[in-house]
Image (cartoon, rainbow, N blue to C red; front, side, top):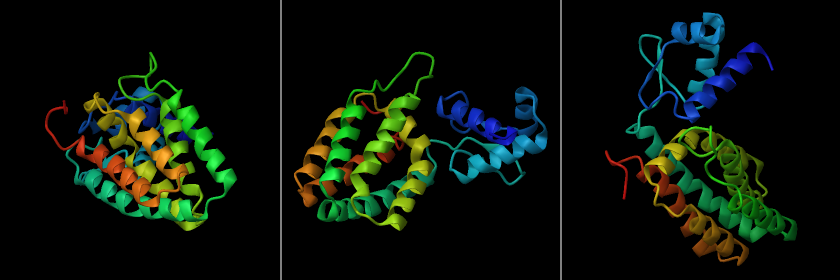
Amino acid sequence: MTLSDQVHARLRDEIMRGEHVPGAALKPQELANLHGVSLAVMREALVRLAGEGLADRLPNRGFAVPSFSDRRWQEIAEARSTVEPAMLRLAIARGDLDWESRVRAAHHRLARTPPFEPGEGEFASAAWSEAHRVFHRALLEGCGNTVLLETFDRLWTASELARRWSGHRNPGRDHVAEHAELEEATLARDADRAAACLARHVTRTAEGLVADQPAS
């Protein structure tokens, strides 16, 4: 990894762990001093984070952590709830036995990975977040369309921060049951039910950020 890669990875982890609160300024010079790197290296890392949806570029050339109220989260959720159910329908129609096995294995790992780990901040752990991504991608891989899968990858990265925030603000949400229902409907080849489950699942993440107070 280059120095820029290392700084980008460290700052990304800090934002994901909640060390920089929603709406907080990300001042390039202060962060460069804190991380012991040049201003150019830090600015490059921040530009990359902005491209991933993990930072906002401000008019005065500064940066900030996106806020809970950012309309972008709702737009990303709308895009995902439109694209992903259609991909899942294709996957159910085209997926073979190997695909079914990958879906079952990915769900097994997700269900048995603790969502929170000591020392990783107040949001979901890196291990659970990766298992979560792998499960959702496995569901859709049966579609066999690389362009659609690349679209999924971009939307997933763009929504990662909102997903972690939403889980923290909605502690009563039953992710385990939602994922189990998704797996069951998909492997039963019930396209209508699976697509509806996935659309609801994606929409609930964005809905969790709308209210001023955490949902009960």
